[in-house]
Each structure stands twice: as C-alpha cells, then as structure tokens.
Length: 325
Ligand SMILES: [Zn+2]
Image 1 (cartoon, rainbow, N blue to C red):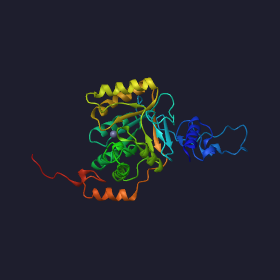
Image 2: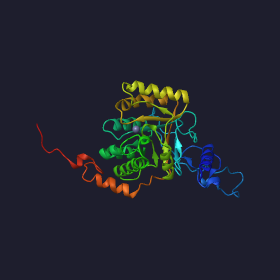
Image 3: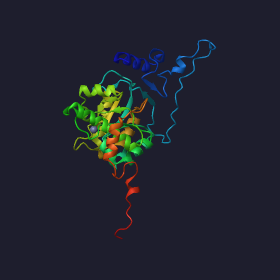
Image 4: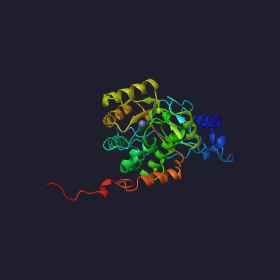
C-alpha cells in the first residue's frame, strides 16, 4: 500500500467511516469504542430487516477496574504496521488517532530491577496499560522482569540493542542495532514483541525510517516528553512536565523511562492526577507481532549461551545455600 493510501485508510478508520470497504482492513481498529467499524458490520447484508439498526461493531469489553479511583483503559487500538507508520507529533504528523483527553503511556530503556517493577505496580493499581520500548541488552540482563511486563498485558516494543545514536552509525551498523535489539527482546520474552520501535534519543535517520518501513515496523516518537532522564528532575518535576504538556496539548503519546527511579516514584501520583484531570488511557497494540531475522536470532542466542537469566529468573539458576548467620 502506498503511503497516501495508508494515510487515507487510517483517517477513515479513526473517523469511523467504512474503511473496510476501502482498503480491506482498517489500519487502526478501536477495540471498545464506536470509532471504527469491523469488516463484518460494514458488510452486513442490505436485505436485513429494515427497522433493525446495524449490529454494533464487534469490540471487546474492557473489564471494570476494582479500584474505584483507577484510571483503567478507555480504548484499545490495534495498529496495522505495514509500511512502518510513524506516531507522535514531535516527528510524525500523519496519523492523529487520539481524541481529546486521550493519552498513550510509553516507557523506554528497561527492563530494570526496582524501577520497572515499581512502574508495573503503579499501572496495575490503576488497571491501566502502557507500552514499553526495551533495550536489547537490558532485556537479556533481566528477562524475568520483561516477562512480567508482558504478563501484565502491556505492549512490548524494541529500542535497539545497546542504545546508541543511530544517526552516528553507518547504515549497516544501524540496521544491526535495530535487528539485534529485536532479536534480543524476542529471546528474553520467549515470543516476538509488538512490531513497534522507538529510536534512541528520538534520532531517526531517514534511511533507517525507510528500513523500518521495509520491515513493517511502526515508529513511535512522542507528543509529550517528560524529560525524566534529566538530572535533578525528581518525581515532582516529572509529574509537572507531563501534566503541563498534556494541559497544553490536550492529548498525546507521553514518553517516560521505566529505567529511571524517580519516574517509578512519580507514577502513583501522576496516574492519580491524570484520573483527576479527566484524561483517558489508550492502549496501543500491534496487529501482528514483529518478525525477527533468523541470522540475528542465532547471533544473539550464540552470544548469550551460558548467560544466567535468559529465559528464566537468575534465582532459579544460582541459589545461596549457605551463608553467614
Ligand atoms: Zn532510550
């Protein structure tokens, strides 16, 4: 599908028109709202009893949150990553799929002990979902934590193997960083991640954007950068930056880092403020999982042979059996 056709397809899907008839499948499907029709409802036979309203779109119901003050999830959207669409207005302005007050929470650079579980606990308390862009090396260091992220129902994407600035690499090296990152996250998870990618430092060279397009991997930039990596920001600073950004823009993809301690500390209050401010969480999912390349899978497996922790918690490999009283 050419980029213009894709753009139109997504616009139709989001505005709730009969995109299924236009392009076969909507690029973004809403999983609980009335914004997108399914192929089945669009194709309902005209011979049905005239007085009967069309069947509602077959969307899943999101169970209510046990926490009455929980943010929950307002909408789940499925993204067709064919051709590598970009999201987040800081770099990519083609697909404006969020409605007013809708927020997508994203966390980069994990998994990391302490901080990632802290983020997971805060999200769980609000019955809400986020997307995690994991660094390949960190995924291999802490696969048990990344598995917890996936087990909690969050989306996992990739963020290169070693978090280098791809704009400073030769194209072959940059591709290798992307592919090894994907293969490492897949090995750590035990299954392929979402076909979602974020560039380290949000620096995406044009040739790598095109490469991700050829791999059908969607690119995520951001609308609101928390700058939570800045020294001295603190939990209060993270909350203020995110809330100020959302109040100004009204909606958006928020970039944070589960790698950062004060982000984990900020999250309980940030989620409470989002709820109080009337913001709604949208959970993004990939229509199909990423397809890794076998040669990179083999290279990652070879290089991690004997590395404790890949595939199972380190505590099951190495146990303390005696020590000082
Ligand atoms: Zn990063």
